[in-house]
Each structure stands twice: as C-alpha cells, then as structure tokens.
Amino acid sequence: MDPTLRRQGEAARGFLLPSEGLALHGAGLIGGQVGPLLEVGSYCGKSAVYLGAAARECRTVLYTIDHHRGSEEQQPGQDYYEPGLVGPDGRIDSLPALRVTLAEAGLDEEVVIIVARSGTVSTYWRTPLGLVFIDGSHTEESVRADFQGWSPHLIAGGILAIHDVFPDPADGGGAPFLIFTEALASGAFEPLVEEASLRVLRRIA
Ligand code: MG
Image 1: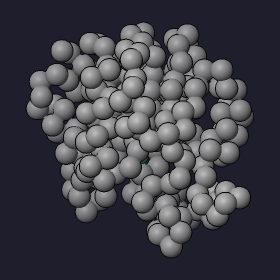
Image 2: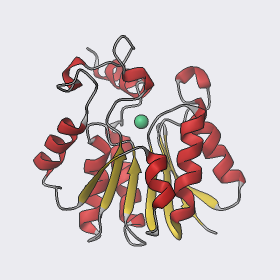
Image 3: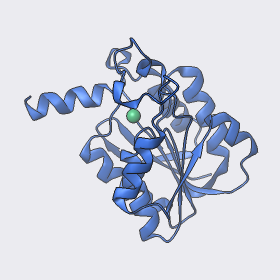
Image 4: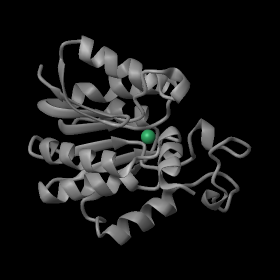
C-alpha cells in the first residue's frame, strides 16, 4: 500500500505516527526533568518505547496503564479487532505484546506496567508526575475521567500530552479535542507543540 495512504489510515485508527512519536519523546525529555512519566493506554507499547527512552535519558521511569482488554473498537466484530491479540480465555489481551515490545526495546527497567483501569489507579495515586500522556479509550466519559483523574497529579512545569486530537469529530477524535480545548481554556496550561493529532501542553499553574 502507498505509505502515505497507510499513514493516514493509521492516524485515523489512533495509532501513533513516527513524527508524533518523536514529538512525544521530546515532551518526555522535558517532563522527565520534572518528575516520573505516566501514560494512559499502553496497548502494544509503541508510545511506551518513545516515552520509556525519554525516561531512561532522564533517569526516571514511565508508568504505563492499560486494562489490556482492548478499547470499544477493538472488540470481536468491531473495525479494529486484532485476532492475534486474543488470550487463552478468548478475550482480548494486549499485555503479552506489550511485554515483548518493551523487552525488545531494552526498556524493562524503565517502564513500569500497570494492568488496571485508569480511574482505579488515579483514585489512589499519590506520586507527583512530570508528564501525563492521555491515549486511552476515546469515549467522552473516559477521556474526561482520564484528564480529571490525572491532571491534578501534574507538577507545575510538567507536561500534558493528548493523542487523537482532531477538531472535526468525523475524523474520529471528538472527545480528545474537547478535553484539549478545555485544558487550554482553564488557564492552567500553555500550548507547547502540535504534531499531527498530538498536542503537548505545559502546566503553568
Ligand atoms: Mg492514540
């Protein structure tokens, strides 16, 4: 397939483009000076490699959270179902793929895998963070809960990154765009970088 077409398809599916990965890595290098990094939505670990490498350079860690049961659109019969990610119980399980990705990248020490729902972890979380990357479920309820659950843990000077920010909901990113807009409007964040559907903000208050 034509690489440009494939990239467009991958962007629409919520996958991280190489240019977004590099921007995310740069954001991780800034956030990693401030505190540990945290990602919501590990899936098979592509963004965890970019952020985990930044964590290693900053001598900190990346926490990556996912229930690994797949998002709404990844369930059997849905558009983004991956038959290769079915566990022994017949349910989606992306954890083995994540572990392979991190081991191959040599990031087992720097990336801490948390298998849970994001809200369950944020409720009990106590460690101030240097970066929060929101890339989990795309329902408005989930994206809002991720933002509200994690942004209070961001240290001033820390980074908020949001993936799949598309101003036009027809492109598949209505809820992340909404939360990006609300974060800016709150006055607590300033925009730093825009790369494809990735938005990078810095906490200023
Ligand atoms: Mg995404």
